[in-house]
Image (cartoon, rainbow, N blue to C red; front, side, top):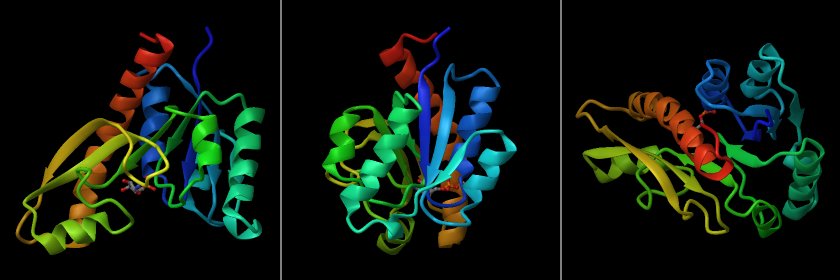
Length: 195
Ligand code: GRF
């Protein structure tokens, strides 16, 4: 059986990678993670990938003069591994139209707010500062405008009176780990005819 080939792009801890890889290992998502690409030396996601026997490749953006050069290096790897779908999981870099057009409607991202509220890197802090009573997480397609692509799925997380950024982030993370694998499964079923 030809399973859809995924690449994970991550910058840090990789807990979402772990949840997705576990869902695949459990047979919940019929797919294969071909490669994890990360951009920060020492990112924990590399260790997590190694433990699972998945190739982890460091492409440090600091080594490239232009954003496009970094994207080109990423694309070379995606092509080399025959990747069908790119899963951004805590990828903290803006990608250029070069990569986005090569994988149009085939790049997914997860964001720790109910988009279109609180796009950008400070979503959890901003939700707390505004005093919203419900926030959450969103899985969406990636387009050139950051955090603005078509929304595929969302989960709500109540903000509690005693919440700190850390406590709220932790509860959002817990929802992400459920929502992202489910959404990837649905997405692949729709686009690749998987059961
Ligand atoms: C998640 O909260 C995700 O929404 C955001 O970055 C965080 C990544 O966490 N884009 P992890 O690296 O998957 O643990």
